[in-house]
Length: 114
Length: 114
Image (cartoon, rainbow over all chains, first blue to last red):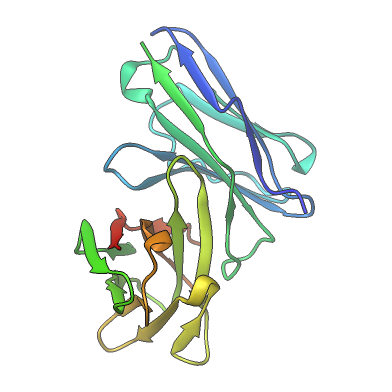
């Protein structure tokens, strides 16, 4: 079946511009996660959506970052006024939900801020 | 707070030899433990998980991992390495009690030489 998809695969933007990254989770998965992967830094948790519950935004690094999930499916991560330190690969994952379920990852969006 | 340590940035092994990628963790309650693999320019792929039951867990591509509660470890193993196993491996943990996000280690690069 279809896996997690993300778009765009690559995004180059100028410092100060806003960007939107999209994630389409696996159909039927109630949980959706965003992570950031920087070179040599492992995965940094950003935000978590579970069903209709309020999202866990505890990992968002600043108020320039926000995310929404419409209709319990597609999610958009928005970064306002991008900075060079925002350059990274942004990974989305989904799972059936619950703490014991494994997450399935998309291919990521490579963001470069010039 | 929960944490994961992968003490080796890189592991080198010859094809056909056994491999071990180390992981130790820290959580307040009982752990849920996961291993993921990332091939170049790809998202993370789930390999295996420990939730409960047998301490030896078998996963994809011939990999297995042993949960050791006393040593708080979850080392990844394979009896005979393949060149195609060369990739970046991530260990991850979450607390089985209540709500917690998944915490990833920084990753270990496995290089299998012909």
